Amino acid sequence: QLQLVESGGGLVQPGGSLRLSCAPSEFTWDPYDIGWFRQAPGKEREGISCIIPSTGNTYYAPSVKGRFTISRDNANNTVLLQMDSLEPGDTAIYYCAVHKHRGRCSLHPIDYFRWGQGTQVTVSS
Image (cartoon, rainbow, N blue to C red; front, side, top):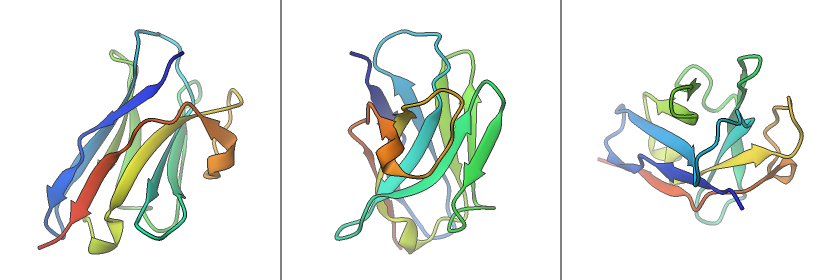
């Protein structure tokens, strides 16, 4: 069963940038509708962005709008999350997942499945 694999996390100073990648665990050309989420210690999982590749529509949570950019690398069927102007409050494990319904984009974790294992992002000086 296809799963997602996140990569690109790490330690970065405040104001820095990281680019996360979300790729399928096995080859597929299917352009899944993907959401990015994050979970900090002791907090609930938070939806931060999603994309519908068939339309190019994207959506961002207010907490990251203007700083994060979601996009799709069509050649590799990979979804990217460019994170700029990072803040200590962005520290969390970042996950991607597939929306259960085609052509949909939401920031509610319950709408998604096939979660990846996550990648740690730490913003600290």
